[in-house]
Every structure is written in structure tokens, then in C-alpha cells.
Image (cartoon, rainbow, N blue to C red; front, side):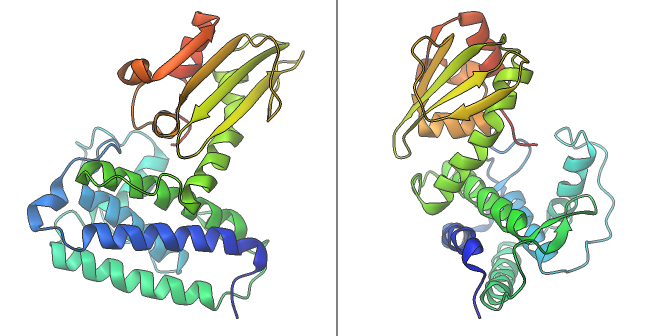
Length: 274
């Protein structure tokens, strides 16, 4: 048996990205595992540890019993503490230990997906002792591993896969959060529209509309008189939305037209990942 048809897109995207991660880190020597990545506070080793840990949790493995150090500046809330546990417990693992555990975990996880017979609505394990549907779990794993693949590519100077299956899932995932960014976080006035124009390997144009009650929605129709138009390339968009870079650092790659105060508020609140 294979995964349910509605899950296949996520399974394929996840597989594409985790195999790319495995190939990226396989030839690394010991010192390269400590290299900084765009993911705040995490090294190459930390990102691979996170991927291993999250896939182990999807397999049903118990979480490690481990006490976090108190001096981790990037750990500031319960969600970050939860994620850090799988990372910190592996911080002293050697390169061979990391690559062998990654390979073994991916073999187990791919076998699990090949043999998956549960329905997409089945409730499964989620972070912080919560539950989520199997479909959402696999969706979020496909999104997460693509973003972390890009973290590793940036850290290792090996760009690529900006238009892979995981990139398209990432686009859709980030666009779902855009109405809240514009309407709630940035405080766009009622009855206004904001256009996002993205070029590059993944191209799209979306309009966020704020209704009379201040609620946001997003669609693919152009607006004739938007309050703000933000134009940027795909890499800049995902890096901003995933909190990999601040707006000030990429202001030369973002063209903002219209209400500059609102544009600035949107860009300051653009990051939507925890």
C-alpha cells in the first residue's frame, strides 16, 4: 500500500527535500557541522538534529530525557524549548554519528510512508503534546524540511531547489498566513488592498484584501488601487516570511510602492514561522 492520494504530494515533496539534505551533509568533515545557518541559533548539526528528531516523533519514538542549558539566547518560549530538546541532545555527536542516524531515520520514515494506510483525518502526534491530522502533519513536515534544506544550502554555499515540490508547498503555506500579517499584525485599515508581486523560480501575484470589519483574505485577482504594492524575488520572500532575514537587510531587494508607513509595518511583521 502507498499513502492516501491526498497525501502523496506532501510525501513526494518531503522525500525530495530530505534526500537533498542527506546528500548535502554526507560529505561534510567534522568542522563543517558547526557552521552557522540562517536559522537563528542553529548550526548545520542543529538543523540535521532537528530533522532527525521531528521524524523520530512522527515514527512514535519517545522524546529524549534531557535538560536544556539556561544560556540558549534563541530559546524564549515553550515551542522553542520543545524543538530545542531534540537538537541540544545531539550537539556533541560526531559527523559519522549524525549521518548514520539521519540515514537510519529516513529509511524507517520512508518505509512508514510506503506502508501508510491511515486516512488523512487520522489524529497523530504534534508538538507540545498536542494532536493534528495526519494530512496536516505531513504537510508541515514537507514545509519544514524544504525550509531547512535551504538553510543548509545557504550555510554550505550550495544553492538549488528553489523551485522544487517543497518550494510550492512552502509558497502555499506562507500565503495562508499573509492575511493575518497584513490585517492584524500590520494593522492595515479596513477596505484596503495590498498586492504582493513575487518573481523568480516561483512566481505569483496575490492581493490581500481587508474588509470593513478588518478581516483579511487573499486571492489571485489584481487590485486596481492597492494601498501598498510589495515586489520582491522568491528567495527574499521566503527568507523574510520564515524569519531568516530582517527587512532592513534586504531593503535593496524589495520595492515598496504606495503607503510607505503601512509597507514598513507589513515588512516588520512578515515573519510567520515560530
